[in-house]
Length: 380
Image (cartoon, rainbow, N blue to C red; front, side, top):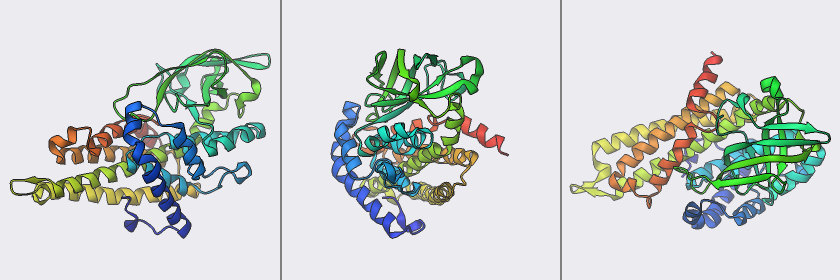
């Protein structure tokens, strides 16, 4: 369980909210988790139920039907979701894409999309990565060329979370390819537009229940009113939203590390070897002790980062450092926890196997660990 006893005492409303989230996931997520992993996608019914329970976009403005809460509530949802062992794409909707529409959308765009995003009736993805372009977003090739009152979009995107379910995609494209980063814009593309198509639901090492897709745009025409914010400002918008995205990934990593540790403790106390529990061997206890110390430091750092973010003071370098630290931490702890399971850890029927698989991508998406080091180094 998320160790509330070693963390700063939250206010009463936040305590009640966490309890609500835990009960909801126990009732609506855990019984379906294995099936979603096999099917490679989460039911739309779960999205609708999450919306009804107030677990989608809790920071959205009240004017559009949101709860207008601070980011601590998002953090609770991300922690509990990751601890449950689920890779459902709720954080993408609540921690990333909603803020682009809230901060850069027109009143018409906000009124159209924010209410259904809150209710779960609209699932939104953001299409950045391309087959030949990952962290280097300045090098994207997708274009959105103006033609009268329309943009005509062409290009391919890949590794897009929520791609199979998305009703709306925020497409990162070049409206002026000659300007590099200054020619990047964000365009809203509804999934029913002619020329838009989805490829396969990609076969990943882990995070099997998170639908991850190829998306194709072939002369997709959208009105210029689908431009999100100002033309040519897309790259600046993406950079401005990176701290929260990277903090969200760090939160997931820390919660997954805690779950991996808890699974290792439970398993080693139950498993017998040479006439005693595996837990009673000094190597086991020392390994777990080291893991516990790392987790204690990790939670303290994470709470510091969340507090700074809520106060509007978390810098890009600090968020990048948080992502680097916590994603590297979960890889180490998940691997050590699997090792303590012995052969059982390699069996998919044990939660540690899923945690170990799912953790690996956290060092890649949202900016690789190597990119995080470069961002941090530039701030020194």
